[in-house]
Length: 100
Image 1 (cartoon, rainbow, N blue to C red):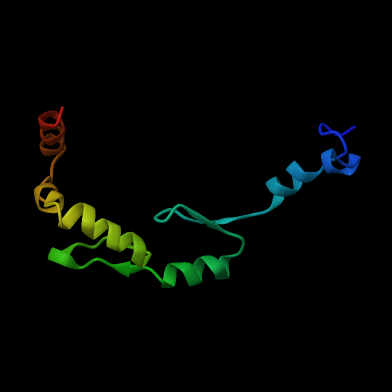
Image 2: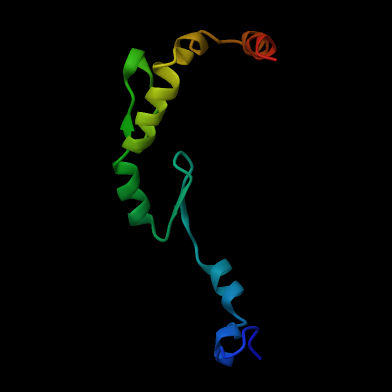
């Protein structure tokens, strides 16, 4: 029976195989953009839209909207310049400790 009065019974019925079908579907994932695609062609089309930042030799590459956010958060704030010279684990740990 439906949870809501007057709602048809079919509204609360669920295909018992729904979960199994979802698990069987293979998805293709763009780790940079955190997006899934249902086939490899869609993923490749998406990856072809990626652009490289290029500011100060930066190699960050992603969808143009993410590159814009990256520029705003990394380059416009000066964070990229401060972080780009962290070459050793010791340098990184020191940088982290300074921010605690």
